[in-house]
Image (cartoon, rainbow, N blue to C red; front, side, top):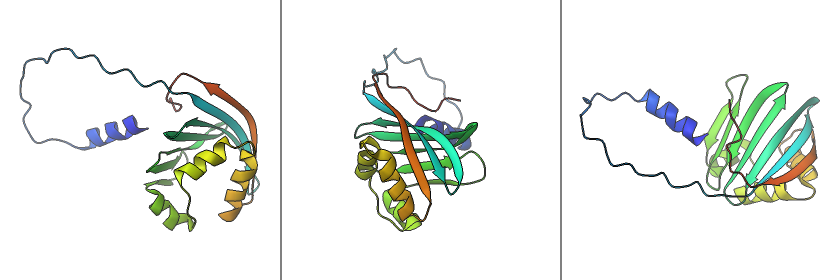
Length: 158
C-alpha cells in the first residue's frame, strides 16, 4: 500500500527540471526485508444485514491489514502504530490519517495497540462486534480461521 501511494505521488508530481546525465552509480545490494511472523485471521461478518468475508493479517507491533470481500473485494484497510488507511472499491469512500483524525470521525478513541489486541484475542469476533456496536452498527463477526505464516508478503496483490 505504501509503495502504491509513493508511486501515485511520484507519477502525480511532474518536475520542471531538465534531466541531468550522470555516470551510473556502483551496484548496491538492497537490504533484505526483515522476516516477521504474520498471523492470518479469516472471518465472516454480518453488518446491518449485509454479509461479507475477509482476511486480516497482523505483523505484531508493526502493521495490521484487512481485506473485505463479497465475490469481489469491497475494501481494504491498513493500520500502523501512527496511521490508518481505509479505502472502498465501490464509491468514493476513503480515509487516511492519524488516530486523532479517526477519533474525530468516529467519536470513539481507539489505538493501534487496542486493535491489535482485539484481533489477536481468542474472542476476537465478539470484541470486534462490540466495537461495531459502539460505533452504531449492528454487526456479528465470526473468526473462521487463524494461522501463523513466516513469509512476509504484501497481502493485497492485484
